[in-house]
Length: 298
Image (cartoon, rainbow, N blue to C red; front, side):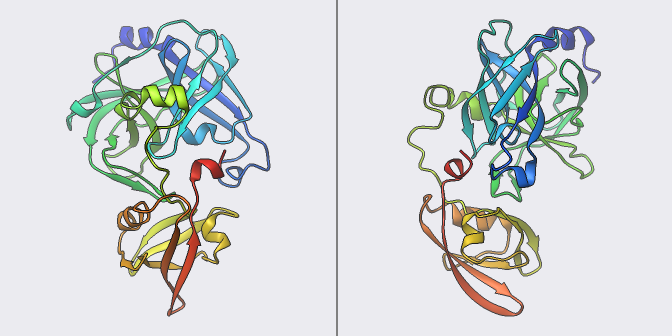
C-alpha cells in the first residue's frame, strides 16, 4: 500500500519529536548515551506514548510538534515489561490518535509508520505485518505478541504504527535486519489494558516487579552467552563475566534466551537467583541478588 497522502497529513498533528537530556552519571548512559532523539504519538489530551529506552533517566524532555510548537514533557510511567513510556504533555489539548485493536491484527495486514527525523520533520514508511509471535531481545526483554512488519522504521524510535484507516496499532521500537522483518512494534493494547494504572500510579498495580539481573544475553551453542553486563548491575556485582555461558537458572537447565527469561521471571525482584555458569570449561554456580529494574534506572 501507498499510505494515502490525505490520511498521513491528517495524522501528522498527533505525532511528536522528543529531545532528551540525561545526566552523565545515570546508569543508562553507558549504552544509550546522554542525549537522545525519539518519536511519539498523542493518545489523548495531554498524554503521549513513546518507547521507554528514549526517555530512561531523562532529566529534560522537550516535545516538538510538526507545527513547531514545543513544550517540556514529563514522564508519567515507564513500563519496563512492555517497553512503553507514558508522558504528560502539559497544555496540549489538540487531536489524539484513535487506538485500534492490536489483538485483531493479521499477518499480511497493511500498516505504516510515521517517524520523526528532526524537531518538525516526519517521514512515513509502509509495509505489511509479517509476524505476531513472541519476540525476545538481549536486554532481558520479551513480548508474548510482538508486531513485526516489513515497514522500515523511517525515523527515531517510538513512532506510531497505524493501519490503513489511521488507527494506532503499536509503538515502533526496533529496526530488524532479517529479510521480511524490518521493524518491531509494541502492541497498543499493552497501554490500553493498563491505561488507568499507568497514568494514575506510574506502574501496573498488583503486578509484582520481576527479578532483573542486568545482563545482555545472546544465544550460544551450549546455552546463552553473557554478551555484556549493566555496569554495577546485580550480575556484575555478583561476579558474572562477559563470555560466561548460562546453562541453568535456579537449577533449571536452559538452552535458549527465552528459557533464561522465563526461569528468571518466576522470581520476584530481590530474590536470590542462582546461575549455572560455564566458564573456560569450568562449571560454577553464582548467586545473584536480583533487583527491580525500574528502581535501578529511576
